Length: 140
Image (cartoon, rainbow, N blue to C red; front, side, top):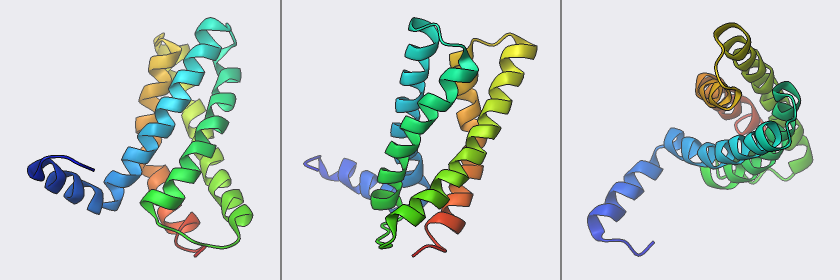
């Protein structure tokens, strides 16, 4: 990164903290998720509870690739097994996301894309903790 020295120092310190790397990579996955969810729900008129698992799956693939390399710097050789564990953790996160999204939409009348965005933030701590302690620690 060719940035002025103060910016590089801040960037390096920020990225030294694993949780922030997780959030950065997860942010890329969340943008993937929200963009695809929006397109499916708003443009394709797919019911939000059907759009959610499709956008989630795309985001999970992006998230796994980034978290494995950037956040946890993991070189576990049995990637397919590790991905299966990661995907299981993510599916639980999806169920939580779906629950919180449905509550917001059905009971509070929140726009589905906004509800999805809020739910991603609610489930963030679960996803980080489960992936840190299960997917990328136990499966080294």
